[in-house]
Length: 119
Image (cartoon, rainbow, N blue to C red; front, top):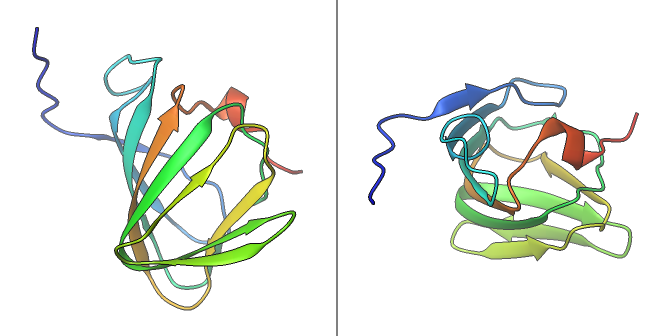
């Protein structure tokens, strides 16, 4: 059975500046626990706390550049590129040099309880 998602739910974002998270599929908008799909829009200079999530995260950058820092590397993911972060890996996302727009897919679905942000 097909289920049309007419509009996303705006989810509150962590970080030092306002970031827009539009959840299309996930625990909040579609009551889907298996995975979440969200469109992210973050401003230049945005940074969020590090995290060690209980889910795999697949990120496709549509515009700008997303900086992804892990314990072993620091990667700039530019428009047209993607990155995979496996569950249990510490990661910190930011957009230090320019605005960015990207799609994040989390498997299983994102939840505040499963992200384990640094304090």
